[in-house]
Amino acid sequence: MRASDGGTADAGRAGGGGAQLSRRLYAILLAAYPRAFRREYGREMLLVFAERCRDESRTKGRAALARVWRETLFDLAHTAARERVDAITRGGGLMRILRTVVLALLAYAFALLVAAPLYVRNREAMPGFVNSLIDALISTGVLFNVVFLILTLPRFMEGVRAVRAALVITTLLIVALITLMVIASGPPAYPNLSIIVAQILSLLVWFSVHLWWVLRKRATGSAATV
Amino acid sequence: MAGREPGELLPLTPAVFHILLALADAERHGYGIIKEVEGRTDGSVRLGPGTLYGSIKRMLDEGVIEESDERPDPEADDERRRYYRLTDFGRRVATAEAQRLARLVAAARAKHLLTRT
Image: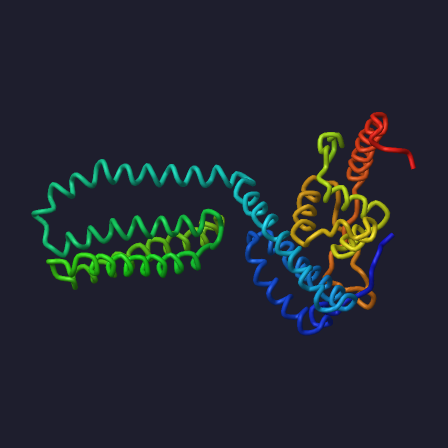
């Protein structure tokens, strides 16, 4: 036996301006849920919400929409958090994050214990631009990798999109840091141009490395998320 | 869910039990479930979309409900909707939860917390 309350061609459009606007706003707010959950249920959630708005505004007037919104926002706040936690802890997600964090920490520890002393010992013998470039590669690398991890581990973003976003965010962070340093202590004694060129080159290096990695994973059919 | 006992899933959350009750006598789509629960509880329980589909996701995973294969007639209903129904295991889970709650009510009655109406 199947129960039906009648058809709706488009509940959002049928409910008037307030219901239409509510539908659009709720469609944006659905971004609070994990991508996989949205993909599976987002369309139906939107349909259910639109039908509710339509029915409430038809039977009880537009003021009833305020109550629908109050209940829906409360519902969204606690269920989106739950689904986010669920998405992280499900299917070995938590172990994946822990494994990645441990590997990243080991790599940084290796760089600090082995590479850094070698670099510091030979720093004086290196040309100025090489020093700037190595400094930039280390600082940009740390920032770029942290931003990339923050974007991809909880699956806010995936693939090439995450690499592009990491480039934009890291660039903004570096520009902000350099600006703050210049404001706080004036321009550095050594040429600014070499620092800027070194930062741009190192950003391109880290962008290329991540892009290569993401495209290689996609080509070999590995998980889309990196 | 072969080999599983309904008792393993108890106690159910109120939302899950309400959804099982809504599906006990008919296949329903999401909004149909919401309306049935709201009508049965005189509007005191209003499931939000997140609670409903979060519960549905977990109930599908546990095998207590399933998606209906039959698609509705596009003339009579919105073909984008998905309909859900109880599985045999889901019906046993609902029965087990109802019996558990009935035992609790009986205990409350024995303690004179409830009067028989």
